[in-house]
Image (cartoon, rainbow, N blue to C red; front, side):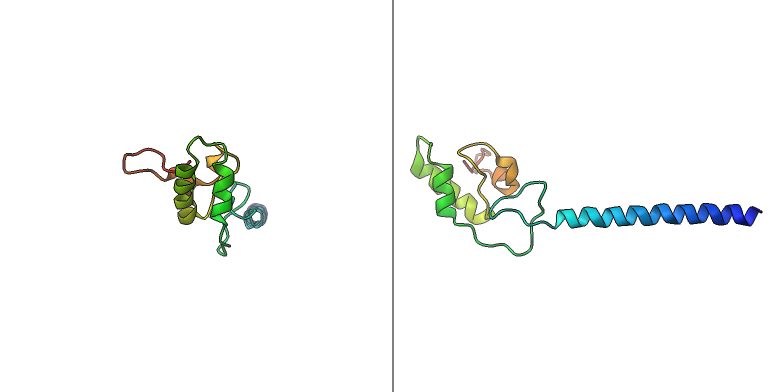
Length: 113
């Protein structure tokens, strides 16, 4: 009688462990989606095969409303070359590209527009 209770508890625990492993595998499959070119969002994981982003076009779009376009495009181009990523829109949205967001000048100010 005692052995059957121990056996039953063991079977239940192994079943729960298998369910957790299957759910974890499903979560990993969700992470392996490929993000749109040049963008990183939490719903997508970076892949190991990166295609080179057209930094010139991406930075022109990013800096089109800037009052100092040449400086903006130059700084954006440097950031894009290092990160292979430019956030969407003309400002903000930097959480999409953490490398772009975290790059600083020597003075400790954000480098990327």
